[in-house]
Image 1 (cartoon, rainbow, N blue to C red):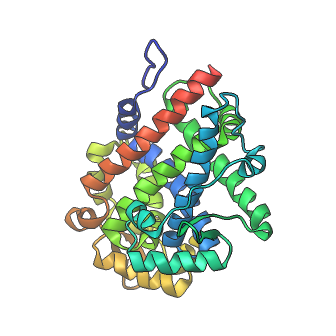
Image 2: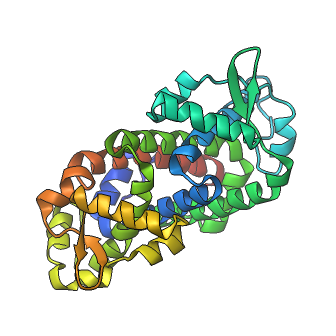
Length: 333
Protein backbone atom coordinates (compact mmCIF):
# COMPACT_ATOMS: atom_id res chain seq x y z
CA UNK A 1 0.00 0.00 0.00
CA UNK A 2 1.33 3.47 -0.94
CA UNK A 3 0.12 6.43 1.15
CA UNK A 4 -1.23 9.47 -0.65
CA UNK A 5 0.61 12.77 -0.36
CA UNK A 6 -0.83 15.60 1.67
CA UNK A 7 -2.41 17.12 -1.43
CA UNK A 8 -3.96 13.69 -2.23
CA UNK A 9 -2.30 13.58 -5.66
CA UNK A 10 -0.90 10.39 -7.12
CA UNK A 11 2.22 10.43 -9.27
CA UNK A 12 3.09 8.12 -12.16
CA UNK A 13 6.04 6.89 -10.07
CA UNK A 14 3.56 5.84 -7.37
CA UNK A 15 1.70 3.72 -9.91
CA UNK A 16 4.84 2.19 -11.42
CA UNK A 17 6.30 1.35 -7.99
CA UNK A 18 2.99 -0.18 -6.91
CA UNK A 19 2.84 -2.41 -9.99
CA UNK A 20 6.49 -3.39 -9.66
CA UNK A 21 5.87 -4.43 -6.05
CA UNK A 22 2.69 -6.41 -6.79
CA UNK A 23 3.54 -7.36 -10.35
CA UNK A 24 1.89 -10.77 -10.62
CA UNK A 25 -1.41 -9.55 -9.16
CA UNK A 26 -1.74 -6.14 -10.80
CA UNK A 27 -0.19 -7.03 -14.14
CA UNK A 28 -2.46 -10.04 -14.36
CA UNK A 29 -5.40 -7.66 -13.88
CA UNK A 30 -3.88 -5.29 -16.43
CA UNK A 31 -3.32 -7.99 -19.03
CA UNK A 32 -6.86 -9.30 -18.48
CA UNK A 33 -8.13 -5.78 -19.08
CA UNK A 34 -6.01 -5.46 -22.22
CA UNK A 35 -7.09 -8.86 -23.45
CA UNK A 36 -10.75 -7.90 -23.07
CA UNK A 37 -10.12 -4.63 -24.91
CA UNK A 38 -8.21 -6.25 -27.77
CA UNK A 39 -10.67 -9.15 -28.08
CA UNK A 40 -13.51 -6.65 -28.36
CA UNK A 41 -11.92 -4.64 -31.14
CA UNK A 42 -10.65 -7.76 -32.94
CA UNK A 43 -14.12 -9.31 -33.04
CA UNK A 44 -15.50 -6.02 -34.38
CA UNK A 45 -12.89 -5.33 -37.05
CA UNK A 46 -11.30 -8.81 -37.58
CA UNK A 47 -7.80 -7.41 -37.05
CA UNK A 48 -6.03 -5.49 -34.29
CA UNK A 49 -4.25 -3.45 -37.00
CA UNK A 50 -7.56 -2.43 -38.58
CA UNK A 51 -8.98 -1.58 -35.16
CA UNK A 52 -5.93 0.60 -34.42
CA UNK A 53 -6.77 2.71 -37.45
CA UNK A 54 -10.36 3.16 -36.28
CA UNK A 55 -9.12 4.11 -32.80
CA UNK A 56 -7.06 6.94 -34.31
CA UNK A 57 -10.18 8.50 -35.79
CA UNK A 58 -12.32 7.79 -32.71
CA UNK A 59 -9.75 9.53 -30.50
CA UNK A 60 -10.06 12.61 -32.72
CA UNK A 61 -13.81 12.63 -32.09
CA UNK A 62 -13.20 12.88 -28.34
CA UNK A 63 -10.56 15.56 -28.82
CA UNK A 64 -13.01 17.75 -30.74
CA UNK A 65 -15.67 17.21 -28.07
CA UNK A 66 -13.23 18.16 -25.29
CA UNK A 67 -12.29 21.30 -27.22
CA UNK A 68 -15.86 22.52 -26.83
CA UNK A 69 -14.94 23.31 -23.24
CA UNK A 70 -12.71 26.08 -24.54
CA UNK A 71 -15.96 27.85 -25.37
CA UNK A 72 -18.09 26.49 -22.52
CA UNK A 73 -16.49 25.19 -19.31
CA UNK A 74 -19.74 23.38 -18.47
CA UNK A 75 -19.97 21.57 -21.79
CA UNK A 76 -21.42 18.10 -21.21
CA UNK A 77 -18.91 15.45 -22.36
CA UNK A 78 -20.76 12.47 -20.85
CA UNK A 79 -21.53 9.18 -22.55
CA UNK A 80 -25.23 9.99 -22.26
CA UNK A 81 -24.65 13.18 -24.29
CA UNK A 82 -22.29 11.59 -26.85
CA UNK A 83 -24.81 11.38 -29.72
CA UNK A 84 -25.74 15.05 -29.29
CA UNK A 85 -22.08 16.03 -29.19
CA UNK A 86 -21.44 14.29 -32.50
CA UNK A 87 -23.85 16.72 -34.12
CA UNK A 88 -22.17 19.75 -32.54
CA UNK A 89 -18.59 19.17 -33.66
CA UNK A 90 -16.76 19.56 -36.93
CA UNK A 91 -14.33 16.69 -37.36
CA UNK A 92 -10.94 17.45 -38.85
CA UNK A 93 -10.08 15.01 -41.66
CA UNK A 94 -6.97 12.88 -41.13
CA UNK A 95 -4.71 11.85 -43.99
CA UNK A 96 -3.22 8.41 -44.41
CA UNK A 97 0.29 9.69 -43.62
CA UNK A 98 -0.90 10.85 -40.18
CA UNK A 99 -2.42 7.42 -39.47
CA UNK A 100 0.82 5.70 -40.50
CA UNK A 101 2.77 7.94 -38.12
CA UNK A 102 0.39 7.21 -35.24
CA UNK A 103 0.20 3.43 -35.74
CA UNK A 104 3.48 2.38 -37.45
CA UNK A 105 1.35 0.34 -39.87
CA UNK A 106 2.97 0.30 -43.36
CA UNK A 107 1.50 2.95 -45.66
CA UNK A 108 0.13 0.60 -48.29
CA UNK A 109 -1.43 -1.63 -45.62
CA UNK A 110 -3.01 1.42 -43.98
CA UNK A 111 -4.30 2.65 -47.34
CA UNK A 112 -5.93 -0.71 -48.09
CA UNK A 113 -7.52 -1.01 -44.65
CA UNK A 114 -8.80 2.58 -44.72
CA UNK A 115 -10.42 1.90 -48.10
CA UNK A 116 -12.17 -1.18 -46.67
CA UNK A 117 -13.29 0.75 -43.58
CA UNK A 118 -14.67 3.51 -45.79
CA UNK A 119 -16.61 1.00 -47.87
CA UNK A 120 -18.19 -0.37 -44.68
CA UNK A 121 -19.10 3.09 -43.38
CA UNK A 122 -16.70 3.12 -40.41
CA UNK A 123 -14.81 6.00 -42.02
CA UNK A 124 -16.06 8.85 -44.18
CA UNK A 125 -13.92 10.27 -46.97
CA UNK A 126 -13.54 14.05 -47.20
CA UNK A 127 -12.84 14.57 -50.90
CA UNK A 128 -12.18 18.28 -50.52
CA UNK A 129 -9.42 17.86 -47.93
CA UNK A 130 -8.31 14.43 -49.16
CA UNK A 131 -8.67 12.95 -45.72
CA UNK A 132 -10.97 10.75 -43.65
CA UNK A 133 -13.16 11.09 -40.55
CA UNK A 134 -14.71 8.60 -38.12
CA UNK A 135 -18.13 7.27 -39.02
CA UNK A 136 -20.79 5.34 -37.13
CA UNK A 137 -23.20 3.45 -39.41
CA UNK A 138 -26.77 3.49 -38.12
CA UNK A 139 -26.89 -0.32 -38.13
CA UNK A 140 -23.85 -0.43 -35.80
CA UNK A 141 -24.98 2.08 -33.17
CA UNK A 142 -26.43 -0.50 -30.79
CA UNK A 143 -23.38 -2.77 -30.91
CA UNK A 144 -21.09 0.27 -30.63
CA UNK A 145 -22.61 1.37 -27.33
CA UNK A 146 -22.59 -2.21 -26.06
CA UNK A 147 -18.82 -2.31 -26.62
CA UNK A 148 -18.38 1.09 -24.94
CA UNK A 149 -20.42 -0.04 -21.93
CA UNK A 150 -18.47 -3.30 -21.60
CA UNK A 151 -15.12 -1.57 -21.90
CA UNK A 152 -16.11 1.15 -19.40
CA UNK A 153 -17.00 -1.56 -16.87
CA UNK A 154 -13.78 -3.42 -17.66
CA UNK A 155 -11.68 -0.28 -17.23
CA UNK A 156 -13.47 0.68 -14.00
CA UNK A 157 -12.81 -2.76 -12.52
CA UNK A 158 -9.10 -2.52 -13.29
CA UNK A 159 -8.81 1.02 -11.90
CA UNK A 160 -10.62 -0.08 -8.73
CA UNK A 161 -7.88 -2.64 -8.07
CA UNK A 162 -5.25 0.09 -8.27
CA UNK A 163 -7.39 2.31 -6.04
CA UNK A 164 -7.67 -0.40 -3.38
CA UNK A 165 -3.89 -0.82 -3.17
CA UNK A 166 -3.48 2.96 -2.88
CA UNK A 167 -6.00 3.04 -0.01
CA UNK A 168 -8.24 5.53 -1.84
CA UNK A 169 -11.88 5.47 -0.80
CA UNK A 170 -13.47 4.96 -4.21
CA UNK A 171 -15.43 1.87 -5.22
CA UNK A 172 -15.99 0.43 -8.71
CA UNK A 173 -19.46 1.96 -9.05
CA UNK A 174 -18.21 5.47 -8.30
CA UNK A 175 -15.34 5.05 -10.74
CA UNK A 176 -17.64 3.82 -13.51
CA UNK A 177 -20.11 6.67 -12.94
CA UNK A 178 -17.27 9.18 -13.12
CA UNK A 179 -15.91 7.74 -16.38
CA UNK A 180 -19.39 7.85 -17.89
CA UNK A 181 -20.00 11.42 -16.76
CA UNK A 182 -16.68 12.66 -18.22
CA UNK A 183 -16.68 10.12 -21.04
CA UNK A 184 -14.84 12.01 -23.80
CA UNK A 185 -12.17 13.31 -21.41
CA UNK A 186 -11.30 9.85 -20.07
CA UNK A 187 -11.62 8.10 -23.42
CA UNK A 188 -9.42 10.59 -25.23
CA UNK A 189 -6.62 9.82 -22.78
CA UNK A 190 -7.44 6.11 -22.75
CA UNK A 191 -7.27 5.81 -26.53
CA UNK A 192 -4.09 7.90 -26.66
CA UNK A 193 -2.49 5.46 -24.25
CA UNK A 194 -3.73 2.42 -26.19
CA UNK A 195 -2.46 3.83 -29.49
CA UNK A 196 0.99 4.51 -28.04
CA UNK A 197 1.12 0.95 -26.70
CA UNK A 198 -0.10 -0.63 -29.94
CA UNK A 199 2.32 1.47 -32.00
CA UNK A 200 5.20 0.22 -29.85
CA UNK A 201 4.22 -3.41 -30.38
CA UNK A 202 3.47 -2.91 -34.06
CA UNK A 203 7.06 -1.73 -34.52
CA UNK A 204 8.33 -4.72 -32.51
CA UNK A 205 6.17 -7.54 -33.87
CA UNK A 206 4.83 -6.22 -37.20
CA UNK A 207 1.60 -8.04 -36.31
CA UNK A 208 -0.44 -7.02 -33.26
CA UNK A 209 -2.67 -10.08 -33.51
CA UNK A 210 0.41 -11.86 -32.10
CA UNK A 211 0.21 -9.58 -29.08
CA UNK A 212 -3.39 -10.59 -28.42
CA UNK A 213 -2.45 -14.27 -28.57
CA UNK A 214 0.62 -13.77 -26.37
CA UNK A 215 -1.59 -12.27 -23.65
CA UNK A 216 -3.55 -15.54 -23.48
CA UNK A 217 -0.37 -17.31 -22.36
CA UNK A 218 0.82 -14.57 -19.99
CA UNK A 219 -2.43 -14.33 -18.00
CA UNK A 220 -2.62 -17.95 -16.72
CA UNK A 221 1.13 -17.90 -16.07
CA UNK A 222 0.90 -14.83 -13.82
CA UNK A 223 -2.19 -16.31 -12.17
CA UNK A 224 -0.27 -19.51 -11.34
CA UNK A 225 2.71 -17.55 -10.01
CA UNK A 226 0.50 -15.30 -7.90
CA UNK A 227 -1.20 -18.29 -6.26
CA UNK A 228 1.91 -20.45 -5.79
CA UNK A 229 4.68 -17.98 -4.94
CA UNK A 230 5.14 -15.47 -2.13
CA UNK A 231 6.01 -11.83 -2.67
CA UNK A 232 6.26 -11.84 -6.45
CA UNK A 233 7.53 -8.51 -7.79
CA UNK A 234 9.10 -7.33 -11.02
CA UNK A 235 12.61 -8.07 -9.79
CA UNK A 236 12.00 -11.76 -9.08
CA UNK A 237 9.27 -12.37 -11.66
CA UNK A 238 11.54 -13.89 -14.29
CA UNK A 239 13.04 -16.23 -11.71
CA UNK A 240 9.57 -17.39 -10.65
CA UNK A 241 8.49 -18.01 -14.24
CA UNK A 242 11.61 -20.13 -14.69
CA UNK A 243 10.66 -22.26 -11.68
CA UNK A 244 7.33 -23.37 -13.17
CA UNK A 245 9.03 -26.14 -15.15
CA UNK A 246 6.92 -29.32 -14.86
CA UNK A 247 3.90 -27.31 -13.78
CA UNK A 248 3.95 -25.33 -17.03
CA UNK A 249 1.13 -27.51 -18.37
CA UNK A 250 -1.19 -25.91 -15.81
CA UNK A 251 -0.55 -22.57 -17.51
CA UNK A 252 -0.67 -23.86 -21.08
CA UNK A 253 -3.01 -22.89 -23.88
CA UNK A 254 -4.15 -24.52 -27.10
CA UNK A 255 -5.34 -23.12 -30.46
CA UNK A 256 -9.00 -23.92 -29.77
CA UNK A 257 -9.13 -22.11 -26.43
CA UNK A 258 -7.28 -19.10 -27.85
CA UNK A 259 -9.68 -18.98 -30.79
CA UNK A 260 -12.71 -19.15 -28.50
CA UNK A 261 -11.47 -16.27 -26.35
CA UNK A 262 -10.09 -13.95 -29.03
CA UNK A 263 -12.29 -14.65 -32.03
CA UNK A 264 -9.22 -15.34 -34.18
CA UNK A 265 -9.86 -18.36 -36.48
CA UNK A 266 -8.31 -21.57 -35.14
CA UNK A 267 -6.10 -22.13 -38.21
CA UNK A 268 -4.75 -18.59 -37.83
CA UNK A 269 -4.15 -19.21 -34.11
CA UNK A 270 -2.05 -22.28 -34.91
CA UNK A 271 0.08 -20.31 -37.36
CA UNK A 272 0.56 -17.38 -34.99
CA UNK A 273 1.26 -19.60 -31.98
CA UNK A 274 4.06 -21.20 -34.01
CA UNK A 275 5.33 -17.71 -34.83
CA UNK A 276 5.51 -16.98 -31.09
CA UNK A 277 7.45 -20.24 -30.66
CA UNK A 278 9.90 -19.08 -33.35
CA UNK A 279 10.21 -15.73 -31.57
CA UNK A 280 11.20 -17.64 -28.41
CA UNK A 281 8.26 -16.50 -26.30
CA UNK A 282 6.37 -19.79 -26.27
CA UNK A 283 7.37 -23.43 -26.22
CA UNK A 284 5.24 -26.28 -27.58
CA UNK A 285 4.72 -29.61 -25.86
CA UNK A 286 4.99 -32.16 -28.66
CA UNK A 287 2.74 -34.78 -27.06
CA UNK A 288 -0.21 -32.55 -26.11
CA UNK A 289 0.34 -29.85 -28.77
CA UNK A 290 -0.19 -27.23 -26.05
CA UNK A 291 1.79 -24.01 -25.66
CA UNK A 292 3.21 -22.33 -22.59
CA UNK A 293 5.53 -19.43 -21.79
CA UNK A 294 9.10 -20.49 -22.57
CA UNK A 295 11.08 -21.49 -19.48
CA UNK A 296 14.30 -20.18 -21.02
CA UNK A 297 14.85 -16.61 -19.82
CA UNK A 298 17.04 -15.66 -22.80
CA UNK A 299 14.46 -16.87 -25.31
CA UNK A 300 11.44 -15.57 -23.42
CA UNK A 301 12.77 -12.06 -22.95
CA UNK A 302 14.32 -11.64 -26.40
CA UNK A 303 11.24 -10.32 -28.19
CA UNK A 304 8.30 -10.11 -25.77
CA UNK A 305 9.02 -9.98 -22.02
CA UNK A 306 12.16 -7.87 -22.32
CA UNK A 307 12.92 -5.24 -19.68
CA UNK A 308 12.53 -2.54 -22.34
CA UNK A 309 9.04 -3.74 -23.27
CA UNK A 310 7.91 -4.11 -19.66
CA UNK A 311 9.26 -0.66 -18.74
CA UNK A 312 7.50 0.92 -21.72
CA UNK A 313 4.19 -0.67 -20.70
CA UNK A 314 4.60 0.55 -17.12
CA UNK A 315 5.52 4.07 -18.24
CA UNK A 316 2.70 4.35 -20.78
CA UNK A 317 -0.13 3.07 -18.61
CA UNK A 318 1.35 4.58 -15.45
CA UNK A 319 0.87 8.03 -16.96
CA UNK A 320 -2.69 7.26 -18.02
CA UNK A 321 -3.73 5.74 -14.69
CA UNK A 322 -2.27 8.81 -12.96
CA UNK A 323 -4.50 11.09 -15.06
CA UNK A 324 -7.57 9.01 -14.21
CA UNK A 325 -6.84 8.74 -10.48
CA UNK A 326 -6.03 12.41 -9.96
CA UNK A 327 -9.19 13.40 -11.81
CA UNK A 328 -11.21 10.94 -9.72
CA UNK A 329 -9.65 12.24 -6.51
CA UNK A 330 -10.35 15.84 -7.50
CA UNK A 331 -13.97 15.17 -8.49
CA UNK A 332 -15.02 12.54 -5.97
CA UNK A 333 -13.04 13.03 -2.74
